[in-house]
Image (cartoon, rainbow, N blue to C red; front, side, top):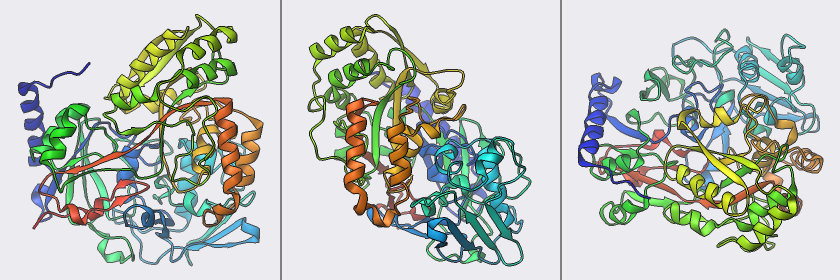
Length: 549
């Protein structure tokens, strides 16, 4: 069912947007200010906790790490460049030692000087909070990280720093090919030593980057403004940006899309979905300022908890992937999904070319799915389906709940607030979610980014867990460890092995993939669309926004 968004309600939203714009940080500055609408709040405005696209698109230009990504569109934007380090790290000792040197004259957005030892503190804080990717990317690989995370050591023994020279040396437990990419995570973007060892969402720590966050109203709005110290640091390849941003959070994506169409707001967030009822109007009226773009690294799926009933039974999982109607889900998503069955999307090395093991994704085979549920002995088993509240994610899970009931489960839907959804289902120690919505937009162009945090049993965390299905398969774990040693630049040498692993995962039905997503890049006519960068890791590049002349 579609809800009509009434004129009175829409007018109220526009008034609120205008009110935020008028009270912005940028209103007292010569720098122009534009309004950015988010359908979902970031998990946290503190990078030590956040692991969402909504947070990362801001954090990557606020919390620079030793490395970062090129400010270029699509494939060229996946290239690593030096961030706070003078050059990409020097790799030695058979791939187990990384050495970098901090640039001189770095200061945080509060004016405090940056020290090499702040890197150690930043990593320790990411482990203590813990950041959701820590179990996949830090704990297994940095010497002493696990001992520190479990309270057996007072610091991370594998990191040594020299504040006088700016040198940072990181020792790994084993060669890990994409570790350069790991250093680019905003969660490892340097913050000052002494920052509280807990998430500070309303008072995030200062970082180093062209932008910083001000004026936070939790789950309502914040200002994303130019860092006054940035221009003096002269870091090549990282622009300063031309505008400030009022960021307004409103879960009604219909209102958001209409506001941008009517030029009452300036930016529709790329990670939101434009309602199908508006697509024709936007396509016709927003020519030159709207595109649907496949960034090449996104998978949308339902997680299936393989550790508990009913999905600890492979036949029950097979029933889901056999009967799921991906075409129906694509229609719910206004046709922006490419139906799929494999976990790795087509643009990621390792995507299989073999036919799907349980039938071509599309209409689904309900009769076979019912038969599999009966054979599994799980018929009538109660299932809770977790979903976000925003469209079309809630609607996708409404369909999925109805589907589970139609094949023999006793399913009910549980809707969680968007802002806390992933944090909630990540409480694996107490909650044990059975199934529900999940998606993944690549952190870096390597298949280990999908498998490490999402399907490797070693990455399961008690809190802020990303392996929602609690997949713990020794074959997957061993392959992730083995293949993960290959540098991102040499992935072609192990592509066939990643393909075999992805085919194995599909046959085991550990996840119910329902599509690869295209994203809307949509702005008002105030924005110079020709100058925008469509970053393949982070979507929008805030530094690329300029006003139309």
